Image (cartoon, rainbow, N blue to C red; front, side, top):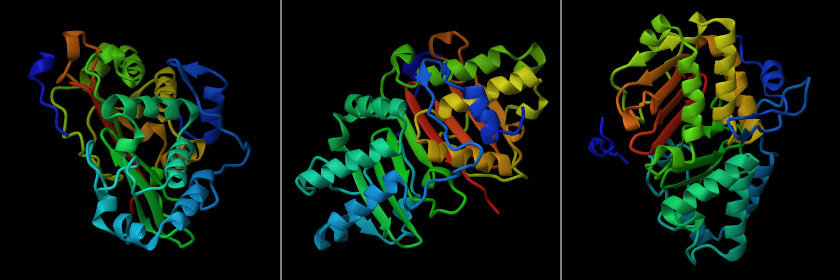
Length: 327
């Protein structure tokens, strides 16, 4: 399919020990893996005392009454539940005079604290390329830090990040998140390394497995509602794969999670473990949107009862992630 014809709408159970053992100090696909610390115990989620959440508290306390009226909402407000690859959650942008210099600094600090070193650099470049930098993004508060329900959220073109101190029950990242990059040359896109890694799984499949994994048309990119154990998932089940293929899937999950802070990674792994592990995931590769007709599948999806990672790489990257337990 010609790129110009594409419309752009705006193993083993994966427990922390095996994840850490597989990751080691290695670098996968040129991406530095986050350090996973605290063995043999497990810090399975961020908390209200985590670095980002502590900074969120300082940010909230710094807001004037007028600022709170503009960017602060009740915890269950519909805006917190919306996901889109290109929207502003509130009208004031980070670079506007609406925020003072200290508040702008705190916003940047929160972004740094909810990401890994690699992820922070990658998202900084993405925001610069796609919008001119973080100054063009916007933030909102839902609920109030210090209570049992609060969340900070940043949105803008091709990026949604959240910090919730694990007050959103059984939801990694505080809810669905989004990332992307407007670069249409796949090899120049900041997230093409993920497609390269995911396609290593496809290349490891035998002919029968590949036929099962390859799907003609992709679902909507934002169709990431969690289905639970009774869900129907496209592609091939990881549980059908050989042990070495399952290990490759585990490495691939590591690569996908690498941009985010270790506490969120821990929570993802705990959720996966509680819902059957990597073996319950399915992987689908879509013939639709094969840029350059090279059979490096640019649209792919990893999905299971508690996990959806939809990556649309054509004509450029939009990725929607939703990970959490239901029921």
